[in-house]
Amino acid sequence: MNALDDLLASTGRVEDITPDGLRNGRAALESTIHDARAHQAPARPSAARRSASLRGKIIVACTAAAVAAAAVAVTVVPRLSSQRPAPGHPSPVQSTAVTAAFVFREAAEATKADNAQQEGWPHAAYWQADSIEVRDGTTYHRDIWIAHNGDAILEDGSLAPGLQRISPAGSGFGYLGTKPGWLTWDEIYALPTDPAKLGPLLTRDSIGLAYGSPARNLWSVVLGLLVETPASPALREALYDVAANIPGVAVNGDYTDSLGRTGAALSLGEETLVIDPANGQLLAWIDADVAYTYTFQGPATSEP
Amino acid sequence: MTGRQRPDSEILASLPGQPELMGVLYERHATAVFRYLARRAGPSAAEDLLSEVFIAALDGRTRVVAHDSGSALPWLYGIAMNVLRRHFRRGAAQSVAAEDPGMDWDAVDARLDAEAKRGQLRSALTVLSERDRELLLLVAWEGLTPAEAAEVLGIGKVAARSRLHRARRRALQALGRSAPDRPTVEVTTATGKEMPA
Image (tube, rainbow over all chains, first blue to last red; front, side, top):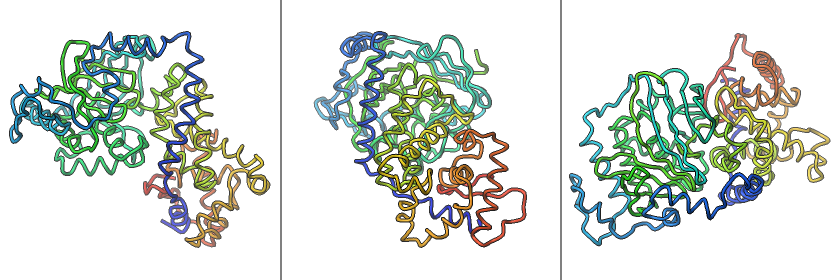
């Protein structure tokens, strides 16, 4: 450090934008986005058709509206109450309320119990994640092979036909507000698997995101670390534990994905995660009017 | 992977057909773009201009190419720089435009009054050309790498490094101290991150 660095560091500090300022900016942008989409209207189904089609292709036990609703708890989901009780947690009883925290803790315990390879795959060559994407009423396949070191290979019908090669800079994992760019494979494995350490770390690292609230920022960071990442079962368990403590996450009932699997839908803001509490498996992710069903996530030895 | 969890590079590639993804970039980068604007024009003007940057980005979405780093921020800062220039040229900032097309010094001075740094900052920065000053500040205040800052300014990466080195030396001299005699220097950014200058 010298006088110039001292000066620039101290004079670069500014107050953050106010929540009202952030909302106003988003509102102004939203209107322009709406206009831009309207100009593309001939190529897209109407909003009503999109909604109906989405519901038709993915059988949503809880409707899209219900997913977006912010009820903190709902009447018990019968399927959940029939699951084995998680060690240390009471079994839910019919007609009691199931909280998101309960679902996440059950999933965390199942992740611990059902996965022998707790340490994960720190040395695998690729992480392969296959999914079915429903966007604007159209179904696409999205398969990605993310290299431990090197380019990722992506096949995503909603982006472009065929395989695309993506540089490591554009194909990392998760997204933190305090780090420009994405986490590397090794950085994922450097994250603590103790929820007591992981929670504060991710809370701190979600600062700078602008989803509207600290809880929403943390929710997005946690989801980003669960999907299309080589996170070890131990880390996934810790992430579920962290998610269990995010205020405002709502259980929106059961969700049956396009493969007929049923899980619990957990929502905050526009993002919904569907997990099977019985085994901790991530089944689907819904973001506004886009839904992804994850058909495979696991290590791979080579790209396609 | 949902839009919210896609890397910037994928979002930029998808923007022409999916303009709604600009909302994701807003959620991800609005805070950083606001800081960029606030550092140069003050917080009040920055709030007014923030949406203008993203709306201009939406208009230019068919022409964008992601930086090698994969981040959309260099592109957004480049747009923010142009939005600021337009703002300073407009009637509300006529007096500023006559003095400096890239910085509202009244707003900067007001921000720094409490820290008694206004005089020092002016001394250091007003000896630089607008481009060199912006290069220095993109690295120091915005935390960009020299290569990313080069893209914002439309100059080569090698040229950016040598320009940055010269700008730092000149600014240091203006502060009344000689530049350290070493080939490279470390810059500590406003976010506390260190990177080679």
